[in-house]
Amino acid sequence: MTAAMSPLVALLAGQEQPNRTDTRIMDTTRDLLIEHHAEITVDQVAEQSGVSRATIFRRFGNKEALIERTIRRELRLGVEQTFQSMAAKSTAKARAIEFISRAFELAVEHPVLRNQFAHSASDLTRLGSSGTPSMLDTTRQAFADVLQLAVSESGQTPILSPAIAADVLIHTIGGYALVPTANPRGDQSLTFRRMIEDLVEQLLIGH
Image 1 (spheres, rainbow, N blue to C red):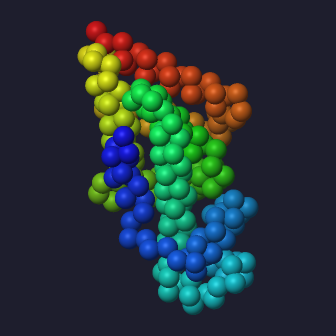
Image 2: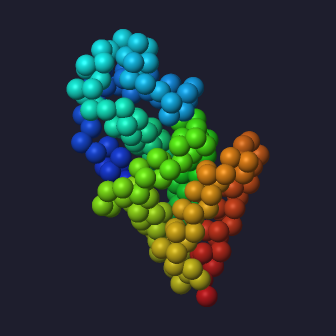
């Protein structure tokens, strides 16, 4: 199961070799992004982290790269936490539901991502679409992979291919994330999880 998501983790990790200095810088950047959205400066990061501007520029290059690496780290940590929650599930179907539901929660409830979607959606979209393969393409493939495992386990011929179902889910999650008034909270998150359960159930019914 983790093999389905390992390309996503590898993509998010990139060439990163974390050390205590980088961690302190990115922790500070994360906190500032939550408080000030994308309107932060390297001077603020330096002052609050206790790391010099020169070191920040040497380690990250510029503010945009610092923000990008911080977001990628938060995404990677979220995916790694999803590994742990999926490990407790006994079937491929349950693991698919857990993975997709967790991805939804990460996109719309993580404070950094929520603020970026609300205030800098174009930058976040660019980040997700850049590279070959892109983060969005890799996530879509991970969705398709976990759904395919569930289909294989069921032995049914699905009414909707895992690839198409994955594409629908990506756009659904993106829509919730991009429209703040539609962002589910509390009971609505449970509602979305039930919707995912229903979708997977329908996918596995076969024809």
